[in-house]
Length: 131
Image (cartoon, rainbow, N blue to C red; front, side, top):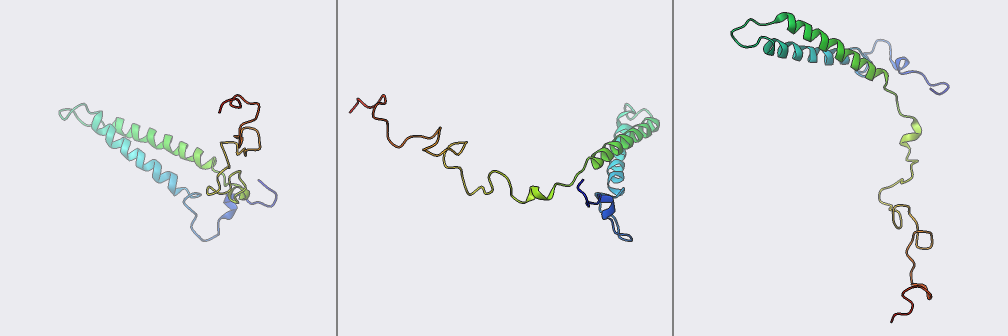
């Protein structure tokens, strides 16, 4: 973090709602969705058929595990989030424009540089004696 740069938490305005990126609602909704999906799927598949009773104990256990695991994963991913540096979006890369293509080959070597093709064959080259 550079000098004078404030963390993302300080970017919040008092009295205004937080962004979904920094609020708690996003990961909680994500985890609740997967917990509900795990609850329904375990409730259906753990019973072992329509003649047997539904296994709510296993369904609640599966939903709790799914909720905790997804909440921990979402928290770890949100903690690892980092804004890009300002200079990265300024176009300071090697190829500034895709319209400008290198002159020849991958390295951008011209004909007079190493790796380029000569304009005419040398006088003492292998093709010099042929008509």
